[in-house]
Amino acid sequence: MASGSTLLLWLLLSLPSVAISTTSNRGIRLELTHADTRGDFTGTERIRRAAERSHRRVNGLLDTGISSTATLKGDGIEGTASVHASTATYLVDLAIGTPPLPMTAVLDTGSDLIWTQCDAPCRKCFPQPAPLYAPARSATYANVSCRSTLCDALRVDPSSRCSVPERGWPYYFSYGDGTSTDGVLATETLTFESGATVHGIAFGCGTENHGSTDNSSGVVGMGRGPLSLVSQLGVTRFSYCFTPFKDKTASPLFLGPSSAALSTTAMSTPFAPNPSGGGRRSSYYYLNLEGISVGETLLPIDPVVFQVSPMGGGGFIIDSGTTGAHLGLSLCFAAPEGRTEAVDVPRLVFHLDGADMAFPRESYVVEDRSAGVVCLGMVSMRGMSVLGSLQQQSMHVLYDLEEGILSFEPAKCGEL
Image (cartoon, rainbow, N blue to C red):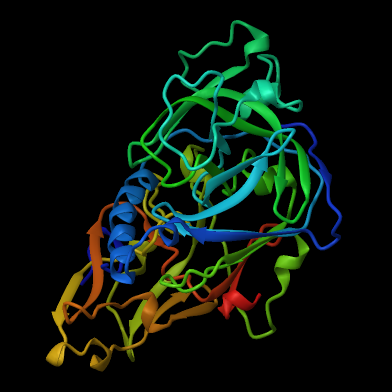
């Protein structure tokens, strides 16, 4: 029987109006890639690296840190982008400033703030693959005045003070893995691979940054708060489709109306209400997980395990920044004669409110053929439960923010 502990299924493993320019009436298409594709790692090594970051990530999700609270008014946009996987899970390529400077950032549905390392000058910056962004070299950079309502959208340390208006409002944001960024809130122009340009995007210009964002220079927050990219763009829906974890093919990210291209057979489930009281949990996308089946057996887990507690803890979220889902039990065993493919594993299904999410074998089973071992990982943790990116691979996932619904269906992501 499961206890009140959160289960973590894991395989071994603002704001002024935003001006938008685009030549496409279908919105933005971006591509996401895994940063580990840029390294010489085997599939098993990538899984192991992902497992390590997943544990660090969950520590951050359990943190009740700072988040934004202001409202945002912005024009809508539609489009797509490429996403690549990384040790921080998935990365997105875009450009910042005028002239545009290429920038690679972590795509994170579990936070709001958009930020990058800044040479303004940079007091502390970790290594990154591209040149540092320098505000002085951009014609469209603007500090946020102390008098701006933008400052209200990011709650800073009460001891922080903005005494010189032209220098901007200071911010500090930290993550559970020890990564943090400290700098000033500003606005800038972002350019996507599709050619779409958005002006006046609020972001953190980090001049003292600790830790690492794994082969990238910052984070693009996609959460439910007003400082996230989707909120600032004013889009009412977005979707992504993660290619198989061991595949080096880019994964598409769609922003706007074009992201609604799911079939009539897609499953849908409503987002659950976020806990009251604000804080970082106001950024998360909560779902109602009602049960889990393995094969034909419904596991004897009390549904309260996956619900938000009266104090605002617990709950079940979908998150792009966590690799695996975390649910409770670690299991590895030797395959007969070392033949991992010969191991018959029962089907895994999550029963959501109004929808069943069935996972293909590669989304919850990890095979180490060199060692002849098969693993089904479940690690017990206290706090919220997480549906991570590994379980979402080969699945087109649509966030309908206006209707408050998550839709999904199996897909050949590399063909979208």
